[in-house]
Length: 568
Image 1 (tube, rainbow, N blue to C red):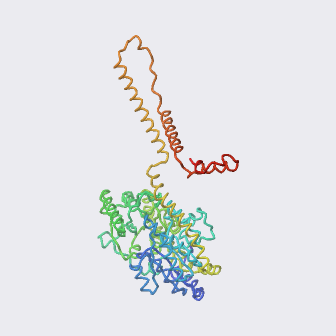
Image 2: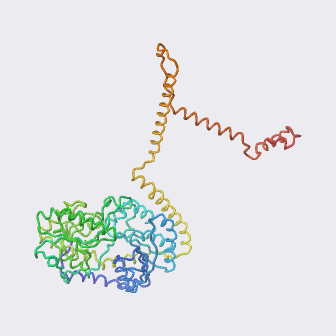
């Protein structure tokens, strides 16, 4: 249950709890987080900054390069930034993978970190192998979401290497369930959410964005909004969850298609799509969504606001905030609920952790515009209940889903593992693990290159190995028919050329022999010819002659004959 309390008491218990943990408990521990990016991922920066400032850890970060907005954040905060390469999807990247893992392992050996924690799939795989080779005492992977666990190829790659980690940190209960289904022991799983900085989302300090005045709408216009990038549509392959095949994860199209049903009851309602296209593929998808709006004649009711920096103010202005994803972790639901925005979300991934149906929001089925319309209408019809759900949502977020809670949970996990962690950085252990790493790397490269890179894509495209047998049978039948037709033509020609006495035409002509026995006979004759050829050759360098000569000497037969006379 969510306890009722006023805003002043929502932060104080958390502050009091954090004050009980002394920074001296973390003195001397060196923490390194690894993320394969140089843009976005502000949560990596916020976690390391607070681990240093609140608990006194010595923190560093390894990113995918040395330039970018994220790099600038770390440098401005005085946090050391190291760089490594985490690409391994292409065939060229696959052959370079051992070198990249060893380069990262060398960095970790030189820095002698006590804790290495990875984020994002690419850096997770390479980082965990490198940390294992370097014998880092505590090795952790914080799982950014269930996306890769719902897809075939990344799931088996993760499952084949997860044993190298000391512990895994799924960031929602659904990811934890998927790991349990993969056979990971529950003792190695610790759920810690990616909580945003709660001080940036304080409704009492924010002034709601004036969308109604900006666009000239009436003051009571119902506002529905979704804050999300426009991501490109995903391919149909084994890197993508089945639910996301051929569609983007945020699924703006479902929300747009839900609007006609909403407008039938609330004709003045407006849908605000807040966000820009992510790279070129995202911009192309955004253009398709604009074309869809025009096709459905919704241009007056669906607004593409573009990128905005005043997200807290925008969320406060909404009557209903929506997340329509088909695969998701918590997907913007925490920020919306921190701003007390009434929430409608699809029942996928970690959204069910933050949006509790009927208590902190409304859950609907994924990829279903009718369901989205039902959830939106439910909140628009009862504004008082919707606001109460928003207030309950904020209380739950402050209790479990904030940056402060994330950092506290990480600190407690570090201390628990440190109490029983081995010394680490042992030279003999690193030497032995190089052999094990070679075996694991060979298995990953072989399975990925042969199966995921060739056989499975061909299988998905319709290829089957028994098609070769079918094709062989068809070819033999075609040859058989061709030979039968040829023999029939020859027999007809002979009968026409020779004088025929019709009184003897009652003689029955036997059909030509089938082709299969003739092919077997031809193959047998070729084999006999090969045996004859081998028999005529003098293979063995005179071994048979030497063997016969030796036997004759032992038996005393033909002792007077010379060795030269005995040779073939």
